[in-house]
Structure formats: structure tokens, C-alpha cells
Length: 286
Length: 343
Image (tube, rainbow over all chains, first blue to last red; front, side, top):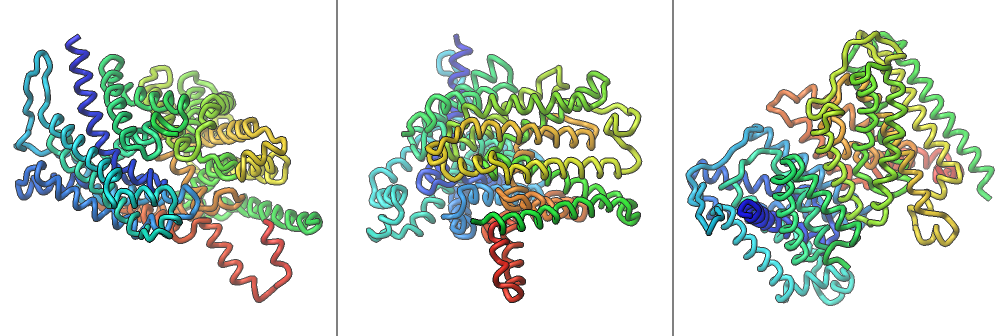
């Protein structure tokens, strides 16, 4: 029983991290109907940003994650300006393929510059700290990440739902031309959406080097997990992505512990297939 | 109303392809080329990837169903041949047959539920399937698990589909593969089934209202595409003399099917060949040139190229070729332009 609870706790905490990674993709997908294949590479680059800030300047990831967020905000906006902008209105796969090219470029640029070595920060504030909660062992870095995830996902949801800027984003998502006629600068909205999407995933990558190793291949799996979170949650639904992410984290932990570690992704991807075969537009999709 | 014009155009087009294959069959006669083993390797890979892309093109280009799952079918074909040789000590040929059938069967089983999904949901489902198959093959003892299958030394020749000292045998096999798959797609283009398939791509409801059974059409196209992808996989493993799950059943391999076709020009007969003829030499020569510079430089170049082509010319390289051809043709003949338009 205690083991089950421990596995569930680990799964939920990991799921919150996935939610933090996925929320930006969810926003981009919901507003622009674009799958950004370089999403996981954004995570990887943000991880390198905080890793190097920690390694060279001794800045803790808890602070430098904001630098990671800012960096990916800029990278996201640049991605929109230089690539995505030209794929809008072209065949639906264009953006996916172009961002696949971008992912390849970013991954190999990091491979070339930073070597394939695994790197992890030691002596961070959160370090390997844990505390007991009854019979459970709670890892502090994961817990803090989960809290950051809750705040960021909640804030993103609030901004989209209840601010003027968010209304403009929603209007653009619903009908681009009508939104333009109402005086919304949709070009700027797209840029902003890519920037915000980048910033959230930058924060996710920024906090990770506390407890996860950085290497050029780290992003690929995050891309896939983020796709599945968003698709499973339902087209552009932020609460849906959060629920799906936690579900994925739990299934991954259960599958990894009770079947075999190699089966954790089989369980996760199997879950996605089971969900979309029953509900072809995802849990919260319509 | 278009029949006379149409037939003339078709014949000219077929002659071009026959001449191309004949010309390629003569390549090994040039000793300068055969002496350059790297060049032969690049030519074989161009033919292989053009064939793979053409197999994908059936369902992905003509059928409009963007599958990122073709590395699964490719892998099943590869394992069919590999297991016949390594596990059972047979000739690869029966394994190739079984592998192709298994690939088609798996494709139908997977696609039936997946075809109910639309757009990105379908694409992501096919990603998920690749990851599942990859993990299952990694731990499946019967197929060699993560270690994969290493070929033993057997007698070279067509019976074992294996050659050691010269690449000429492989080159001809790749050419046969290429001619076979391009021939099948060329036949489909003019056949009733090909029209059904394109009708389903352009509008499933419209096609169904005209009496086309869209599910049956898509499933048949997927089965054919998967079986041919499996055949390509079998050739790949015979050429590499080794197979493991990461080599054949991976997202990167799936992406190659899609990239070569789309960058060449999806839904066109020439697209897969154009895509392979541009991308494969680029990949191989940049790797040979810069592969040692701390790694990754070749793939950086490749990534940039993908972005540039997608952003600049969504119709792919065949679109670029068409633009250039149009520029040259315009002053010469004004009335013959229609035959190009229908092609």
C-alpha cells in the first residue's frame, strides 16, 4: 500500500512537470492549430541556459529559470517570425515539418557545442532534499517544480480566460478574419502566443537541471509527451492538458514500477490510443 | 474531352521513366562509378529512399493520410528477412514474403481505428504506435531484443540476397525495387483505384456520396503502402547485414519517409525520386565531409535545408523544378503547355 502511494505521488509530481511542459504547446496548438515539433528542444535549450548559469556563474536554477523563460520567449517569438509565419495557410503539415527541421538544427547545434555528455548541477538550493510525510518520501525539487507548474498553468489559464489580451487571443483562435475586422492585430497575437508558449516551456526546462541531467537528446521525449498531453486533453484545452499530463505521469509511474521500466512509455502511448479511440477529440475536446 | 491529349501526355511520361530506368541500369557499366564505392553507396541509398518515399506516397500523398508510422512496417519487413536468415538459417526470400504480409496485416489492424481520427490526432496516434512497437521489439527475446540480429557470413548471390566485394548486386536489386514500386504507383495513377484514392483525399464526404467506400479505399492503400514499405525494409536489412529496433523502428526513420516525399513533392510520381536525389546525397556527403567536426554539422545543414524548402516552396522540390521548367518553356511553345498542366 505504501509503495503504491509512493508510486502515485511520484507519478503525480512528474505529471505536473509534463503539464508545465505541455501548457505552452497547448496554447500554440489551440490558437494557431500548429504542432511545434521543436517544443522539446525548447526544454533542452532552457535546461542548458540554467545549467551554464549555474555552472559558470553559480546562479541557482530557482532564479535562473526566469532567464530560461525569457530566453525561450525570445526564441519562440523568433521561431514565429522566421518560420511559422510563412507556413500559415500552407498545407497543414508545413509547420510540423519546418519545426522538425528546427528541432534537428537546435539538437545538433547543442550536440556540436556542448558534446553529448550528460550534465547535472550539484550543490543547488533544493539539491537532493527530501522530507517524510507519514510513510511517504517527498522529493523537494519535484515538489517545487509541481508548485511552479500549478502557478504557471493557472496563470496562463487566467490570462487567456479573463484578461483583455486573453480575449483577443481567444477571438483570434475562433476566427482570425473576424478578429482582424474587430481591430485585433492577429499578427501580434500569434507572436505573443508563441512567446508565451515559449516562456512557459522555458520555465519548465529552466527548473529541471536541479534534478534531471541535460543532454542534447533530452528534448525528444518531452516533445512526444507534450503532444500526447495536449491531444489527449483536447484541442487547446488548458485544464484538459493538465488532467491528461497528471494521468500520463501516473500511468507512466505505475507501468514502470509494476510491469517493467521499458513498459512505462508503452503504457503512456497505449493510454493515448485508448483515449482517442474512445473520444477522437480528446477528453475535454468537442 | 481530354482523352486524346491525355493519352499523348501519358505515353511521353512513361517513355521518360522507362528511359530513366534503362539509363540507370547502365550505370554499373561505367567503371569509374563502380570503382567509387562511396558513390555506389549513395546511388543505392537514393534508389532505396525514393522507393520508400514512393511507398509512403500511396497513402500519404495520394491518399492524404499523413502516417508517421511507416517505420513500423519498414521494421517488420526488415525483421522478416533478418529472422529468416539469422534465426532460421534460411534464404531471406520466404522471410520477405512473410514480412510484407505481416506489415500489411499490422497496417490494417492499426489503421482501422486510427482512420477515425483527424488531423493532428491521427499524426500523433501514429507517433505513439512507433514508440510502442519500438519498446516491444526492444524487449522481445524472439526477435533478438535490444541486441538485434547480426547476419552470419553466407554464400553471396541472389538466392541469399547478399554480396560482399562489390555493390553492383545491391545496386541492381535497389533498381528493381525502385522500378517495381514506381511502376505500381504509375499504374495506380491511371487506374480507377487511384482516382478513388485522390477523391477520398480531396473530400471524404463527397467521395462517399458518389458511392466510394472510403474506409475500404484507405485501408487497401494503407495495406499496399505498408507491404511495399516492408519490402524496402527487407532490402535495407540485407544491405546493412544487421537490424535492431533503433535502426528501423524509430521516429527518425518514420520522418525520413515523410520528409523525402513531402520535400520532393507529395502526391506526385516524380516527387519521391526528386526528394531522395536531393536529400540523400546531401545527407551522405555532408556526413562524410563534416561528420567528424564534433558531430552534428551534417544534421545542422540538413535541418536548415528542411526549414528553407518548407518555408520557400510548399510544393517541394518538384514545385521548384516546375517553376524552372515553366520559365524555360514559356517562350518556346505557347500551346503545348496544357499537357504539362495535366501531368
